[in-house]
Image (cartoon, rainbow, N blue to C red; front, side, top):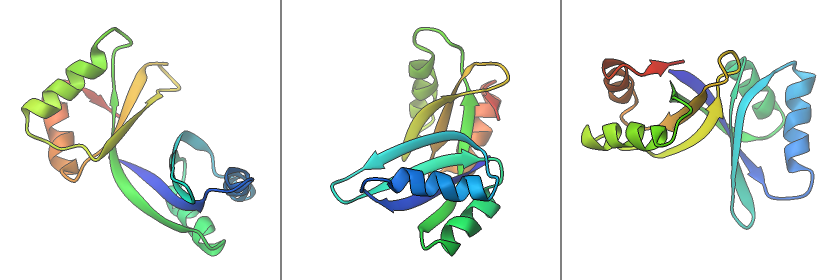
Length: 134
């Protein structure tokens, strides 16, 4: 499973630039990023090339953050492929906390990033169904 860095950040002007500047200064490359916001704070979730180094850099700069395990599942770039993936997961009675879509930079195929409290079981199930996990 991939390691994802989640950062709790204030929802204010320049907040994302402050985060990316810290990562740049520490030579950390972002491969996938998604943000979710509320009125005052948001969660920035990202997959980076060195999650431990990124975690340490963000903590050093006063950010509340954590590292989570996520499944990264390569999909076909066809109509209904996400629906088929989610149908398999539903049929297996596995729960997803959230998901977002990225892409594989080498193959250009879509990749579903999946967070589940049943992470190991989800990963095993998807491998058994023939899905490619990154």
